[in-house]
Structures are given as C-alpha cells and as structure tokens.
Length: 197
Image 1 (cartoon, rainbow, N blue to C red):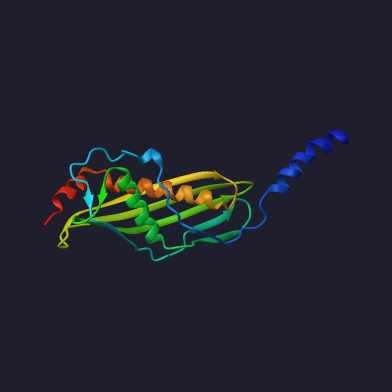
Image 2: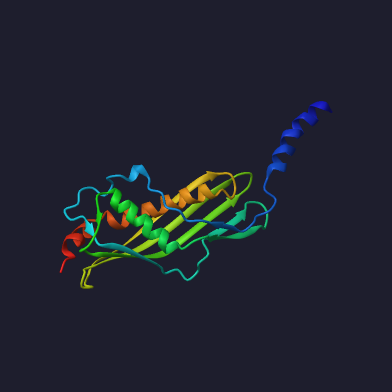
C-alpha cells in the first residue's frame, strides 16, 4: 500500500500544477533590437530613408488567443498599446542596426501591418507562437512609388503561462523576421537608390 501511494503522489502533484483557468491578457508591445540582426541586410549602395510611417490595416484588433490543451477554456489577448507605433519602432530599429540612416531628404518607407497574431497553448507550461505580416512601399519625396514588397515572420517560445516578457520577445522576433524578409531583397535595395526626385 505504501509503495502504491508513493507512485501516485508525483502524478497527483503534476495534475495539481496544471492550469485550471485561462484569463484574458493585455500585452504591452515594446520593441527591443536583437544584436544577432546586425549586418543581416548586407551592403547597401544607398542607405537613406527620411522616415518610416506605419499603419495597422487589420480588421480584427485582437492580438491573439490563449487556449487550454485539455479543457474548453480560452481567452483573448489584446495589445496594451498601438501596434502601428510598435511596428514603426521595430522597422526603424532593424534598418538603423543595418546601416540605414533616417534623415531627410529621402524616400519614405510606408509599412502596413497586415497580420499580427499570437497563440498560447496552456497546460503546465505554455507553448507560444506569433506571426507578423507586413506590406511595405517606398515613396519618393514627391510621392512617386518606387518599390512595393511584403514580409512575413514567425516567433515561438515555451515557458510559464501568461508571461509578458515571453510574449514581447516572441513578437519582436516575428517582427524582425518579417522586416528582414521585406527589406533583404535586391528590389528593396534598388528602390532606395531609385527613389529620388
């Protein structure tokens, strides 16, 4: 009897640690540059952008969803601040980290946030995923379009449930990946040089 009880105790402890409810969450979007992205764009013949403008084109402003793996529990995740400002800071951060100078006169990079979505799957800990999709357009100082492109990126993580820093790191990784995919092309680099009046 004693041996059976000893074998059952770890199982009971494990079950008791499982999350029993899922609460809504509000995540402050805070961009922080990742040192590993330094120099990822490669060489640039032209490296001046007068400014980055960002807009949120999503119809559903929910950031994501939290779900329980074994129970019918779910809750929404919302952004605590403006996603467009976060995108602008992130795109600017990655570009300046790669040698792009933000000053006038020069082309304007207009970025539209097309997708921003997170999922958190909860059990004892949580698995996290984020997806970001951007549409970018370079405009000359007179308003002439010089380039248009897209970028998508994902980020994931695993850890404690509902942890804000985990959300932020994963979202920043997805934004960086989307920005790199959008701007790493030769067409974008050519557009920087051709986008003058």
